[in-house]
Length: 326
Image 1 (tube, rainbow, N blue to C red):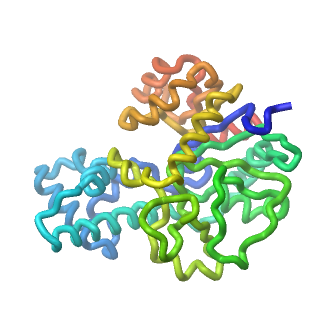
Image 2 (spheres, helix red, strand yellow):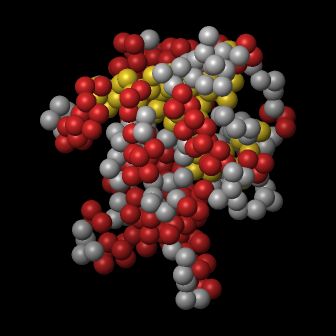
């Protein structure tokens, strides 16, 4: 029997996983295509900032991706005066809202996608009350694809709870229900679009300050204008790591990866830009069983990955891969 404090197998999810099941969910490339003219008018400061930045770069859009944009805005710490500080605060707010609103989706899955995801999730169910934890899902995504799939499935929603690895209580006490004996264990290393800072809490992301808010909760109208808790695609991540939330999540992930027998990556391409993640994950190279990423056989990303990891790299759509495995 597997040690109840570890997992035998781990599935690591990247944006390609969510995109596979819900094509309308944007990847980094899709978000880049929205800048600047695709940014909604509800974010005027951000749109103006991007237009000005693009003009400075003589119209060369390659210098204005979401990653570069987020790094510039989130790393700014020195301001000549109060007006500039407030302007930068507006930019930060609008940037985070723009990314979250772009990725948040209420669209239902197509029937075939829902059926494949359901089989996958059923295969990931743990019987925590019996001390059995076989499978962990580690996700770099902050969308709520998995949570929504469980809520939309009558059988799963009654029998299964999501265990985030840390205690995150619903903001709405009327939404609290007894935890099910069966769990989907889901560590979301970059946060989640249904996590929020409790009203009145300070800025540090401590475990005691975080709550879960769903669209059907009575508390949802109170939080809907707030920014959910997630780490954006930027090199300036230090401010999000103050407090216990992400430190605990990443410490747990490291421990579980060290003790797993088998690690599978679905839709995660080991991006060169995220050096911290690369070092963190490649320490566990010997236990990587499969890396599933959907690219043409001659694509430089696929060639690079095969040089990095070898024959375990499979070029296939994540949904198609899972439909064959489960």
